[in-house]
Image (cartoon, rainbow, N blue to C red; front, side, top):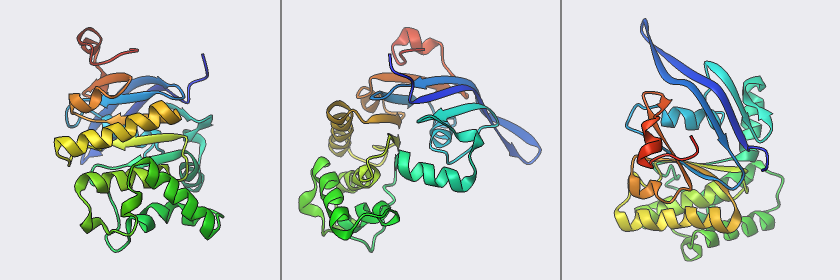
Length: 236
């Protein structure tokens, strides 16, 4: 078996609200291997988005180690984390986060403006990403001219245009109708199965979770042992 792409050991995360300590995550251990499609499920406040943000280097744990793509994130400065994230992480958000005054093409191109690619090379990368999400005929459209499902597929194209090591999706179908959600999930499934893209998705929707190969249930910051028997989680 290959080495894990993500290895989390003894991870805990605490927040302080006034004088009260809130434990968002408690002693989490997790391994994700290259080509996995992992789903993190759980109710609101269970810690799943916090865990995703820590994997992305957007937040830091209170305790424990986080190794992603061979790098110990705990040992990196904020500047080092930003550079590492630009190379290794593609992030898809629930609310799309597209810039309304930019076309679909320009939104997808944005991450490439931080690279040394030429204009021609950037266009090739953008068109490849837009083709993968089935929207080459929408490159000149603005977000307001797109459906919600199309906006999310543009957001996925933006997340993969740099060919990141890992794609992280936080409730990617949360704002979509069932048909649009299915189209977005089929795109993610294709990226995983055809291109072996490693994906970690947060969702509360069991229909979305069914697309993942491995599913974990978080309850109050810990992996639920009951999820093993129920089939909601595997590999625990």
